[in-house]
Length: 111
Image 1 (cartoon, rainbow, N blue to C red):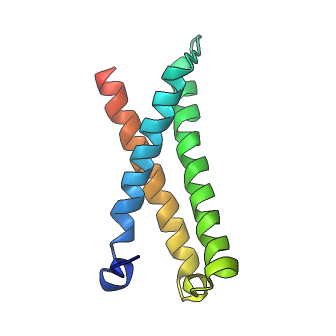
Image 2: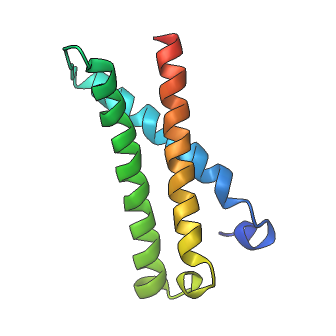
């Protein structure tokens, strides 16, 4: 924001959300490993996927909520009043989810 990159480069936000989803996956995986959280059973791989990607979605939705509240009520910059603001939120959440799914794919290949 200091350099106004989201205004100068229209796609700047997209790879950042993808990387943020990937980072959220890595953080969630490290936290599960640190807490020694284990799921056993026939569908343990699916359960891990739901837990980890669910954590990515939770972090992404929380971030979008912080952006919305910060823009509308604290900083009053007017980003959420721009046209296509809601489509931007959906794209941001999709990119968060995509980064988390890529993290899952890499994790499953190297686990």
